[in-house]
Length: 445
Image (cartoon, rainbow, N blue to C red; front, side, top):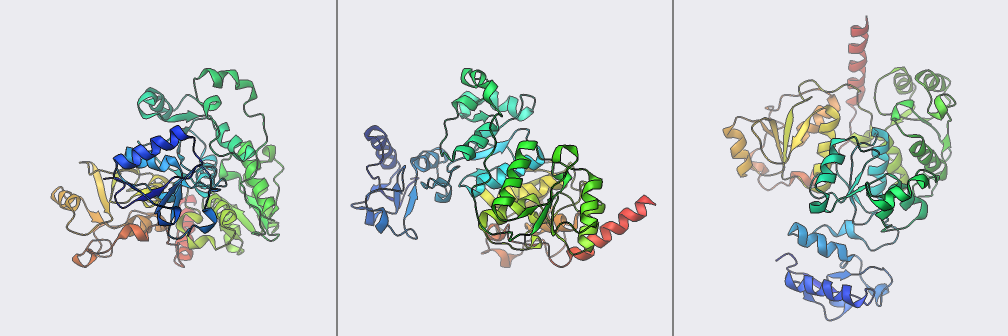
């Protein structure tokens, strides 16, 4: 009963064989045909320009691609309509992507851009992933994906597919010439990496002339660094250029530019090092690459402290979380990916089903959930997601048995997943950064 309650309308934008196939799938899974476009709950289309489109109430009717139908059936439940937009501006609509071996900086560019342009990004390569980006054949993810490709139908792609989708502004760009170990890919090998990249597709006055320095710590490949730099200029930012190391800069050059107050914004991965400390003490805005890209995508600038992933974290892993396994239960889609990213940055691993070696169970459910009973039987601490966020902000393993993290009977009607991803680092970050620097000073003596 995948489409129970769905009343669909399919405009004459599909070829008749495709339209007939969609009608068959929808009817087989209990959807009903709407009498007119005005009676529909869902309009299935490959174009926003269909008869009656100007009269559709976008707030009440979901306009999605045919892929939404196919993916919902495969998952045995309706998928979020948000990620299957028919808008030509949503270049990555229907894409669920993951990295095999991209550098941390490049991965952040891919993740934020794909999400901003209609797709989804996954921290781990699970069964939902449709596109895996691999820069080489050497990673375990690449090997596993290639072994299972005939079953999963995952597309294992060169990063150039992402590049050319942006460069050409083309949605649903044919992947054939970009898929690893295919004749088409080998044939066009000489062409790859030969194009300059198009900046992320936004143009606004976001930065209003602010001087922005990209830290040498970002770990961006030259092509992605150029892409980020062009995006800053397109949003009216003034790029503080690094001249050494082929434009990627060095620690000393970065420190000198901060010391001379050449920048108003420092984009960096970690809250460590003299350049970060000096920028912090001088009141220079310090944010992550994710913060920069998301501000450009939204067109509205909020402070980096307003979201946890917008503020840099320390470079070392968290003792007590590093190499441990944490179970995430009842968190889905973006909420789950957000928590996975926090855990990954801290050095931990994660599962979605309770396992004997899990150190903690993080659950978005009430105290009567079966997985909670199983965890308590195995004496695994059960917490809500604020434990993960607090550990990340303070960058240390916190006691999961503290009352603020434990679930109570009064939580029975709460949906903790709805609260995930909106928290900032708070004013406490000033004391945390000061304490971190004091510890480093004592260790360095």
